[in-house]
Image (cartoon, rainbow, N blue to C red):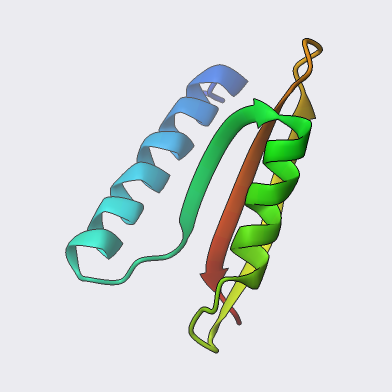
Length: 86
């Protein structure tokens, strides 16, 4: 008889495995992605995202705004990611 894990247990195991794989990639010198999160005014966040998009990168990498969230007090949480192009 196999026991089915609860969703929270399964999610925890998957997250732990993902962290281990990422650490192994970093240790091997393979950086899977660069990610920066900023919390700033809307104008500053737009400027920062534009700066990332205009910043020259290696040709094998793609830059994207991964998330953009209005915090409700005039500030934005913005995550920008640069990752290898497949």
